[in-house]
Length: 217
Image (cartoon, rainbow, N blue to C red; front, side, top):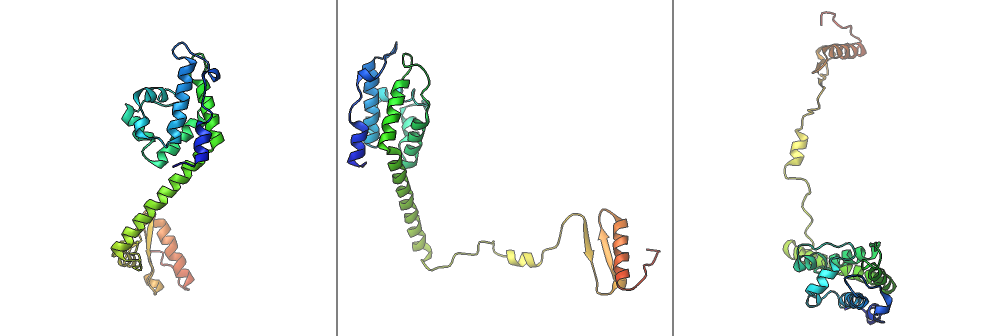
């Protein structure tokens, strides 16, 4: 449950019709009713039984929302997990409430945002989400410790046999591959792309050993 002070900050005082401008399709009383219903819905932590079809229809047309197919789809997207509730509040607070209040619910959106900021409700839901994540992770840790033992060292992150494969690995880098015996007379260099470069390298190796390259090679 939210702290009592936060619930009061969200729901008291109630919005009145005098705070809003009627549209051609909704009265000022309708706007106040929706604003109060939304504040109560948030203060009670988004109960499913309060998410009625008329409330869903109005909410899905405010704060930049879309229908998400139907009432159940909208509720699933925003209200079943603590992390999703944070997303809903973030979208609500960041929405710039476009339009004239004689044609839209922009005046309701502005009033709701001011009330949410004053109550700092998103900070509370972020803490609730962090606590829920911690509890899930601790439960996972407990299951893993039960399965593997608390003091069992973690398995080698490398696949089995990878060390032996590394020891026997051959350099497959495209270009050239050199075989350099201890005897400079037998030094050979294989160049896949340039035989001339291979001969030059062989001559350099022979000269470094004090031998003259054979021009026939």
